Length: 77
Image (cartoon, rainbow, N blue to C red):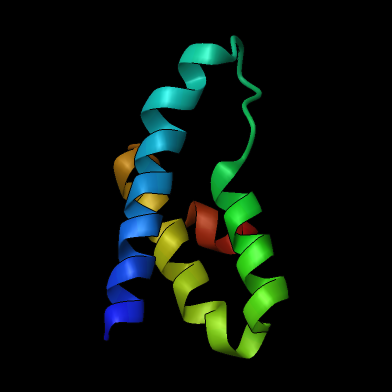
């Protein structure tokens, strides 16, 4: 249970950082994909079968916070 709470905190922090803080330092449309880097590193460390639910959660949360159509990022992840 503690591990899930830590992961939720990391996901929320990463999404908020991706949406609000990173675009301030990089001009233009292209910004580093912090959520994508986090997804790849968690997949390599834990394996896909354990982490795929978290990937969907991160992608939907990114859609909600960035005011995009919900479902666009889960398709790309």
